[in-house]
Length: 281
Image 1: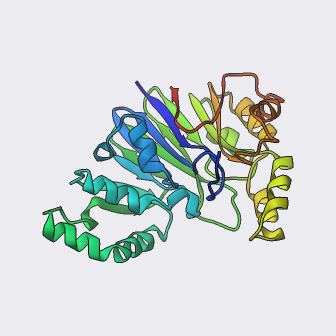
Image 2: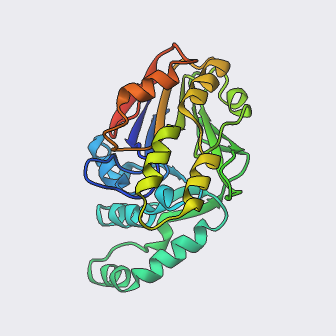
Image 3: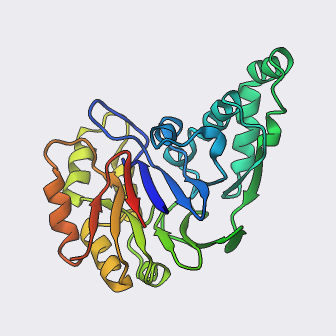
């Protein structure tokens, strides 16, 4: 059955004791396994869903912040050692090919050794890196993309996957934008990033190696939880889930805080993201 699993729901790249993992998702749709973003923990998260790394059909990267592609190379390398021997299309922003080349250079000794010593297939052939466009067709699944608002990055995208009878909209990392409601209109599921403003202030107050610029970035590049509820209402989606949550793992901000904000505008089915949560479409 078609479903989307939230493999990691934490906003930002750092992990700490008690925190969730950074963002990645596994969409199972029309018989395909689609990985969206590859933050730290993605390989483990996929396996925890009972899906072998050799069964991945497509990978999409929404933007080049580390918490969305840090584990892309390691994911493919681990899939390779698990037996992957075919090419996976990887759709992402301009510049992803440089990461792929650099990852291979950093692991050149091991990669060459395994090909020679273990008879592994050519590692580079596993990835067909493509620059993200407006529309991609993948068998029975159409992927539509929309640039979202995540300054200072320009090549950053919301995604909508649709078959004849199902659709899922994913906001990517973005500030509030009215256009998101149009983009997500009528979707079976909207997964939207979210922040609690008071929690951002608390997070920044504790920061030891960032300055005022970090606070400014978070506040101008992400969406208040209440506004996420507003988008879901305006889009009339069937279900709403939140991920990429800031803050995460702060005992002063509980599930109830998130619920209260989202419920200001949204009274439909709601999933407060947790690592490993699977949502049926």
